[in-house]
Amino acid sequence: MGLDSFLEVEKPLEKLEEKIEELRRLNAQGTVDLADEIRLLEEKALRLKEEIFKSLSAWEKVQLARHMKRPTTLDYVRAITTDFVELHGDRLFADDPALVGGFARFEGIPVMVIGHQKGKETKENVYRNFGMASPEGFRKAARLMKLTEKFKHPLITFIDTPGAYPGIEAEERGQFVAIAENLTLMAGLSVPIVVCIIGEGGSGGALALGLGDRVIMLEHSVYSVISPEGCASILWRDGKKAPEASSFLHLTAQDLEKLRLVDEVIPEPLGGAHRNIEMTIQRVRKSISNHLSQVSALSLPELLRLRYQKYRKMGVVLEFPEVRR
Image (cartoon, rainbow, N blue to C red; front, side, top):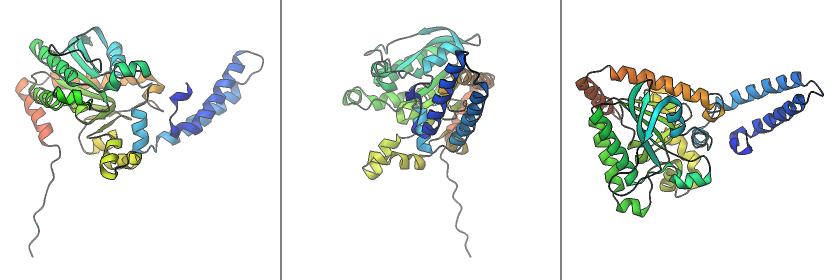
């Protein structure tokens, strides 16, 4: 893997893997047998990788969730669906490339897929606005949701965004209204909804696609009301305290599973989703298939009742009356 593939926490591993690659090249030349040396170094690298990734901090998980080589929405859609037809535009203002969606078939079943789309390199990230959708993106999503309800097709959404685009022009075009309308729409949508958080789930930009019957999440993805940098800027007026803010936000998949805000945490390959993209995608496919089959078996009244109960239970605090002596 390239040098840009290693996070700061992986620096001890970087030199070791470079040495392994160098020995593999020499071994391939056939002049000397280095198989034993390579095997020993591979075992050492595996032990080191296991040690690093079993004790990641919340901030390190944020960095992993933002990794440039992590699979994107379109990677998942192209791998786990067939006959994907991307639909464009909100029919009001413009098309937003930061949010993609369209009809497809998932395991032979017609579905609608919608998700945030980041780029794999700087030029594409600029085009995709780093996955930060504008009002026209959320209104495009709403149009597609209404369309899939018309045809009674299940909805699958993929979340991967630092948040909605915060520019003045987005606010002028009704950013907060577009997000609120999506939440209202998804709450009453008469089709099964499975939400999958594949990277970074930030603020209202994530919530606009995040209200579902089942919410699943990759092991090293994050989901939060605000970015760590934004939180640190508000609390301490210092964005450099983002690592500290991360530990207080309870944004990791493990935190959210304990709080019962997500229904399943999908294990990632050792080192993160980008280390074995094919394995990651197949695990996500299996999880979506499992949850979609369960909610699709419900009657419409039961589906809506359970969805309502799911979100009514979130954030409930039990208070016990003071014991009188």
